[in-house]
Image 1 (tube, helix red, strand yellow):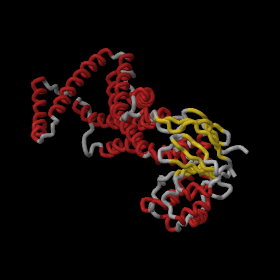
Image 2 (tube, rainbow over the protein chains, first blue to last red):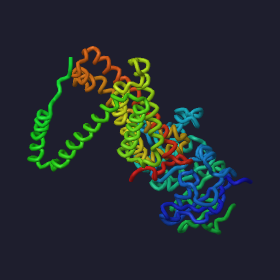
Image 3 (cartoon, each protein chain N blue to C red):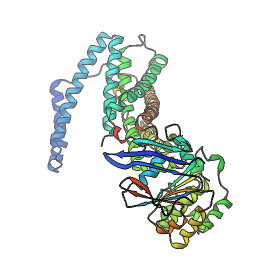
Image 4 (cartoon, chains in turn yellow, cyan):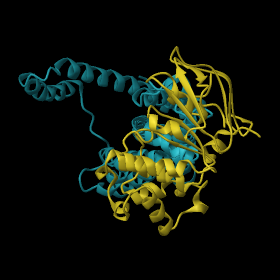
Length: 220
Length: 262
């Protein structure tokens, strides 16, 4: 089977600081891969490298065996949803935030219906009236769920979550786990949250830019 | 009708008028005395040199010399725009020069060749002041456009990256900041056109009337220059921003902070 993501000996240096050091790993379709580690260990940098925000200094990153380059970066971004810890909704109302990606040519043909929006909101324990609320008036947890919903509406091949459930209560978090544990979803998540671990297929530990697999979890 | 000359004694009397605001600002403790003094001296020296140069330029009326003068004005404007918009000159110098050169030459040529049609198309008396006026006004707009665009992208870096991560192309992600910058830069020109003649008498028209022109001719020249300023400002801003995108963003659409002054 071809891996969706392959990091081949990737080193990332920025402002004379090494953020990733010789990182190699693979993520296969349907896997739920978690990366844990202390703050500043390089976890978020790894996700940003894959999205072309921080191009690697050495080594190569592959997405579906296509090397990350200026030619492939848009394809990778179009196939991947990246959801950060403090998502930027970049809109006035929640509805506008959810529909924002569909203004772009890459997704303009795929705009969801009102019914699809409502079903997804319900699955994430959000009420319908949130759609017309101003994004400045919603809580951190609601914001995270809206960002997750926006990613899910795009039906991506791969989801990259960077502490994306840190502000959620137990029930909301469970709703997120239920969605992301679906076999068709491939997940690469950075988290400190031990609740995620039981849903993972592989766990890596990131320490000072180096990635090591935690063996007891292994690949199923 | 000849314009009345101001002799040197009366020029000195004119400078005396400056003493009134200078004293008031000194009494208010604004600590601007030195700056005002320097500004008045610089203005006097610069305009005196321009006076001497223009006199020679008009007498020789050589097309190459006229072109060289316009080119020098363009280069000075280029450096001034980049310095004031806090962009590193070595990265943007050619992009801004191209954008400014294209728009200024286009509107000046249009005005001189198709509208005014002087006996000699390279007549320094027409092309030098007209190109200078268009350039001066264009410069202000371009400073605002570039400064506003890059400061907004920098301030909204997370939002910009979010757009990219949501599948936007570089242009789609930058479009809101591009529009904001163009609007902020062009609004003063639009406001100026809308209030022209009501709030103040425009400089070129006043100059021509003082120079002995019929008011109607002065009005027509003022209208011509405003249309050219509006056209060339808009073209230069759009071209300047469009060309700067290729320089300021890397292959992965990320803003290269190295090209901006800290």
